[in-house]
Length: 156
Image (cartoon, rainbow, N blue to C red; front, side, top):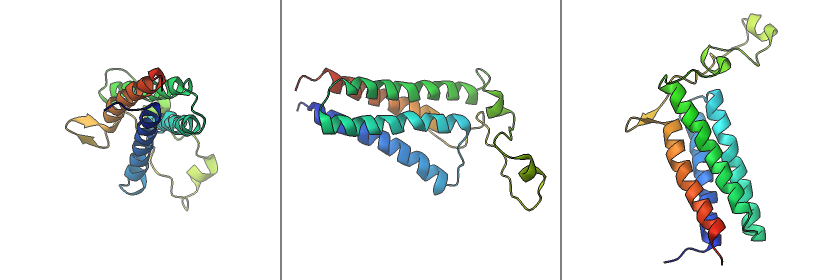
């Protein structure tokens, strides 16, 4: 069975939607607040979804390469995140040092305001089969990049 460009695009678009939906489910249903790198990994998936929708509407094959680039971007951020989690290299200071960036001084000093502890990028909040969420994002995103490339190379 040969998949058409439309079906490959739909698979890649739904793949990013599933990964993004999973991230939101872990956050809002599972109660796992995302760290800064987790948030950064979400944006390329959102871009891939938009790219996929536009490609499905217009049929312009060149957009599939942008989808592949979006998938590779989130995979790259994920590789960096896995390295921070595994202590192979240091993360950004705002991501691993308990930053209070974005919280006003008034809120920090007001005991009536509940200020949550910052989420550290070097702490693994969840893993399956020894692979963290960032690691799974890398694996699935690389697969999506291949699907996007297949869509770009289809001549139908």
